[in-house]
Amino acid sequence: MPGAKKRFVIIGGGPGGTSCATHAARLGAEVTLIEKDLIGGAAHLLDCIPSKAMIATGGAMSMMKGAEEMGLAKVDVQLDFDALRDRIVSIEDQLEASVTSLLGSQGVELIEGTGRLTGPNTVVAQPNDESKEPIELEADVIVLSTGSRPRIPDWAPIDGERVLTTRHAYPPPELPQHLIVIGSGVTGVEFVHMFNSFGSEVTLIVSRQQVLPGKDPEVAAALEQSFLDRGVRLFMGARAESIDVNGAEVTVRCDDGRTAVGSHALLAIGSIPNSENLGLDEAGIEHEWGYVTVDHNNRSNVPHIYAAGDLSGKLPLSSVATTQGRKIAQHAMGMHVGPHRHLDYDKAASAIFTDPEIADVGLAEADAFSEGRKIRVTKVPFSVSAKALINNDSRGFVKIVSDPATGVVLGGSIVGRHAAELISVLALAVTAGLTVTDLVESLFVHPALAEVLGEAAE
Image (cartoon, rainbow, N blue to C red; front, side, top):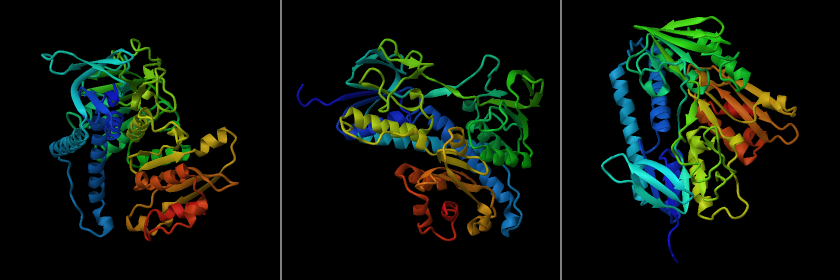
């Protein structure tokens, strides 16, 4: 029909789905978004945001406990668990309302329910209200953004009370006296920091020989030392294989014979995609291990069907999902018909909100050496920073990886206060192809932690 709008149907209202919906609507598309739980995404609003809110509360407690070191009278601070829970719910409600309002302002139709492909161009939406009939939708473009959920092995008796997944822990039913964290990836170490700052004893089960497998060993070592200094028990090279609950006691047994006994256990061993019952086979979509196989435009083997967020099998970061959603909308609306910048996952910045914070971007030193690539590595500790001394926190360092021939910044790592903010400078440098000279000649604020970036670039 001449003049007809392109029709988008998006299944999943997380960062990828909502970003795609708003951008497609702005570009003139007719958009329907199907979401069964939370507008904004369960992984985002039930994992990412609450965890950072709890970490912020723990950080405030630590700062107040160190008041004497800042020239203040000693402060006795206690955690109000109910107030913390109310604060998390308030933040979640505000964010969901904000995203819902934005979608409405762009004319996006929302369906509260589940979506399923019944063919390459058809979707059936089943409203959450079971009294309502399924809604059949025809689509020119279909975007799948159904996210993921915590992985639960057969040996883990999850009950939501003593044995928890991440979804049970924001916050948990009660503050653990002794929490056993299984999994030393990003989520696991954030939980260690979080509950340790609240006053819980914490044991971390580390299946490898360093926490944060795959990260810079020097970065991992800095975090391990911080944990040990704070009294965290580390079971290095131990893989959990069973969990027993006996009243108020939880026992985790490892494959090397060691056991950890605590009041609660928490699994943080990855996630699996929400792709079952999505109708991938009915639509002829190729997938592997539940993840949709996509090209550099996030397009599946069916040209008008895309995948965004965790379901795409790319980096499981909200920032990545949001960018994927925008790129999908632009590509599907015909904006990327010529040469354009594709999303480069190797240049995505990431952060870990422990204490100290950790952030990195681009090429890692260890990866460069394993590839036999020549690099220049410079490192400067925050102890040289006046602002770090003013903040009474000079832990950590800035490390920059660059090309020795051209000076182009290839990557970097930051350990220290506000690392998640400071990494943005290096992320811009990596994405834009800036050189270390560009950083050195930048006039940073004084006194500021960012000055260390310039010093590391020299």
